[in-house]
Length: 289
Image (cartoon, rainbow, N blue to C red; front, side, top):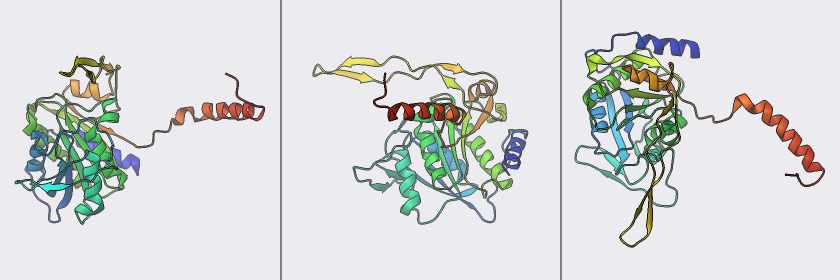
């Protein structure tokens, strides 16, 4: 089944990248949209406008920018939901909070798809560990719903309408291939900031890797206290062919399937032997350094 699933997805990548005429199906998908840039961000507004032509769409997003909040949930403070003039609902919490409360009572129904984005900047390689955009999509996945995280490669929102159109086309194609009705999956998609006609077809990729982040930035507050700002993300360390970095650098829309299981399966054997030695040493007294 998995092989058939990915063959269907890869077949979408061989199609022409130009947008086809949207048409709302007889039975519309129900899509929940979230992001981490906040409900007023151009990315989520463009994504909503694009997807509302092909599905029943609702937005539940953070009130303020929540970049790098990953999968964080708010457990020690109340969450409030308000509605903006455009119908978007916003929450004084994290992206994962928004999806969590939407799926556990706010919506009153189960959406067919959870979509997060479009993020203001790439979520490639190690970014996915920290990303609130990915965290929102992952929350949908954890509830058993197919989920996609969309990001633009460069910050600044250039060609955001093209990115939204590309996102809509991918959603439409996956629906036509009946991929949205299958078991849950989690995709991370990065779209180069290019006109729609210039975008190359999607490419299935693995995550690349980044170098360590830049040094922390220090400043002195008006009260004489030292302040610290997290440094910028490091440059790409592994951007070889087959990675998301490589694909987007060559104009392709990168698609990476993600999973939640963080188990180091390759080294389970090694750690089993190590654990046995530690257990044996512990039986004879304190473990020696």
